[in-house]
Image (tube, rainbow, N blue to C red; front, top):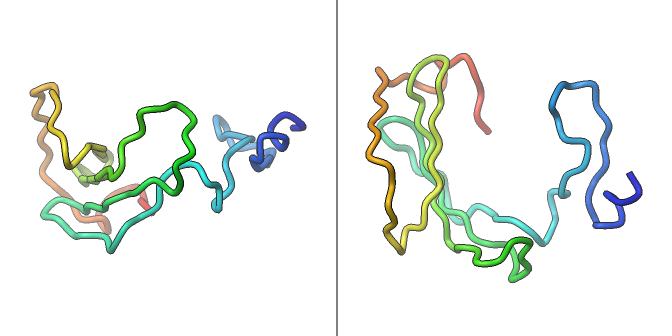
Length: 110
């Protein structure tokens, strides 16, 4: 707990299996923040994320980044993060689903 809080992180013990006890607070200078509104797509939604600050934990950060969320089946969600300004190789694997709405899914996305 001390090491976690010394890094400026939030400590929150929990009984939830596999949930992290140490994490960045919501107002952390690290990470990304939504830029603009969420855009609805045929199969889900898309949002652009920009780095909050120039601080980096791992180096070579990309900004902006696009997050696409696709509701594929009632039990399967696909998300994809990509650089909208630079094309890169992606495994040509097509995984199709019948497509469901967020209301039909057995999970929630915030």
